[in-house]
Image (cartoon, rainbow, N blue to C red; front, side, top):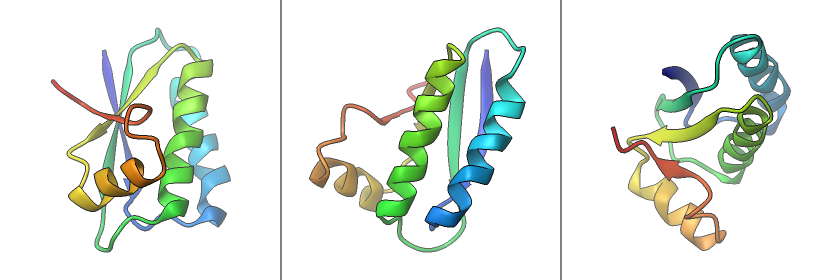
Length: 94
């Protein structure tokens, strides 16, 4: 079962706690599946966006879920590669 979760492309560090709370509320009490993060909005992803996605991935894992990225931009893929995280945050293949 897949659950979609939107994240702004230019997410800031101050948004991370609210994103984590929102995702925890969404997953709590549900059977495990896959969270598909949809990056939305204009702009280029930055390190704060990667941090948000990593924290969301960790949170999803705590609830037994996997986290995948829906159609990551080339900029995000390149940034993940530069940070050595290309294998950690993976695109959704469905």
